[in-house]
Image (tube, rainbow, N blue to C red; front, side, top):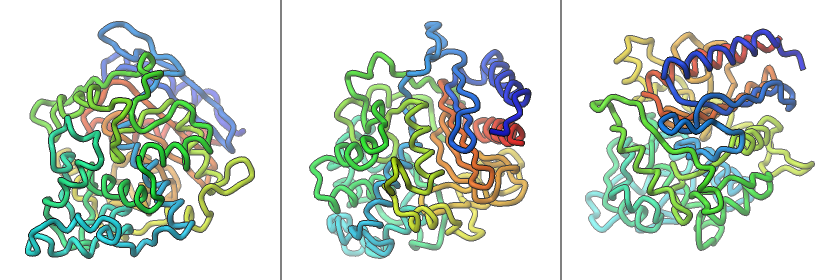
Length: 384
């Protein structure tokens, strides 16, 4: 499969060194080429404080990588004619306008394309309008968003949306398919067809014993405080439905998901996602727009400002030397998704290379970008 085994060993050694110096606690990873696994590794601790070792079947709260699953439901809906990129949020969720016509200005312009490309103009906040202990009830989140105002003209500003865009998208696809629960829709249309038996929105009770706790290592004065993430240990429950942050999965299941897109939507001889939809989802849609959230992070570290580089839902590698999750040596069309300080997958279509990385110990996001820039480059360096 044309992988340099010495380079893969260097990758493992670097990860073990990171864990030894306390940068993060543990890792499950897969590196594959042409769909064949070249390296599957399990390192460090699922929970450093108790000495619990990482195991291959550990179940992770994958945070914003959850958005990739929600995006995939939208891809299916697009290919099946249930939604269009021009479908407005209010076409399916009229109550999103709220009750004040003056505060509803611009809300009627937000469409699915805006949500997928993080250009909705809604606030870039992890708080979708109500306390964290109510995040798990999607109906309550949608009701709360009726009173949240647009802050930018839709389509004019790229600002990564931690919560609001995908809460709205999740409800749009739920209503488009007529399902009672979003989690059941994801199970039926994505997880079961791919054989992702350990993946769900929410944490099934049967998986609780394998769940990796979220332990956060970020400054108290950072963009997010530790409790903003660690509270999800309590709130991602069996019944929770959070289309933006609430999925749980294993390294093997995320690999199955990544492989679906490496194969351009095909699984077991059938196309779960139309190739034409995959093509556009993995094509740059945001031009040279910067991503306001990560531009701010780059400025704090005196880094070059990166372009936003979004397709329809997928983050793309792009070109240039600015630090990013996929590193500067992946091909420009490399695509993937990631979760705050902890999880990542990408597919390099030019090299036919897949990388999946789920870690315990949530890092500061700037440190996380630096880590993945380093490790992604080492993965690419192993492809010969």
